[in-house]
Length: 476
Image 1 (cartoon, rainbow, N blue to C red):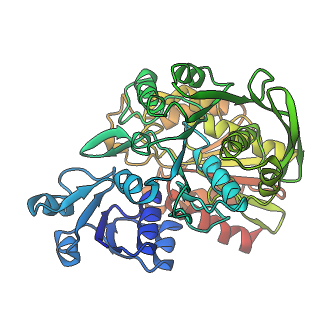
Image 2 (image 1 turned 30 degrees about the vertical axis):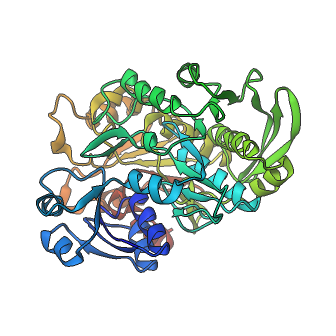
């Protein structure tokens, strides 16, 4: 077994892989800055020792055989420089996943701009419930497992389910991560422009997906969102079996007669216009119906009978930070957290919340944090995606120094456009000394009984979740 050191161990996937390899017997250490729950807690619960901050002394003390370099780590990092200077073997996180976890297993890879975490969690759980003991890598913490990554439980003919991110692999390998996961069965949920720091255009992203599709063997399978023209276009040149899934009746796999029962959705599954049966899953929103339908198609392709899939779906639990209900507080105030940060994800998430909590006012707190939403690329789209929200709080733009003013998101302009729609808008962080307490103070005079408050961010939002939870519990 090896001694492995993770530079950037606090990333969701990095931490999950670190824990999985620790369970496999490897000695794991690592480092990161600004670790926050759930990943900091996750590492501590699994007895993974890590350093806060980067220093050559850390890696010198650890004496690793291999250094795993997170894709957020670049030249100049003191630990990376030490590893290069001392000829320590470098690897990317996807390198380790392919070699140590996927191996000879049948590899199921879930890709797309949106829905990857939920769909990957669904497939892993369906295979687990069906007795197949899959390995998996999820870009979050799936509640059915409480771990984000593990090896397959079968010594041969096993399955490994990966969340296939299109983001780049490392500073020394600029390929999309999913190109290293050797797909046998693949899903493309959707394809939109994102990750403006590494992709120049939608065409640039499409090139990565085309390479991915070209890796699927002839005896493999590709399931593609039949409602997404770009995804269908990319799938057209596959050498394997291709089947579409969608809410339309033209797709091979279709969901029909959808209904909402509490916080669960029910729908009929048709395959090539033949009714297979009715699925009930504790998810809501049409985007989640698509995620569930994709999971049904992929799980069926592994040989699971529909009845086992139907039973497993009913027992599914949402991953952390995917429409996660943090709590219901005095005055029937509900606090929800979601990872949505792309305008499309924000829109469909809020539409799903509106559907589930019909008649209740929606208060949305959005943090512009990703490399794309901190720029003005989606300036107009962001002004159009908060439809169901009556109150919109825009958090402080993350690392505003990265881009010049003519390329940065103009939050004042965003506020103006949202107010023209009749929304109440607040810009947090205008006085940096009391952020995000200024958001709590603003909401103190705005929150009414029955409100649904949703936090949207791919980061910590400066611990706003905890601050609001404490405030609602004490003051509402």
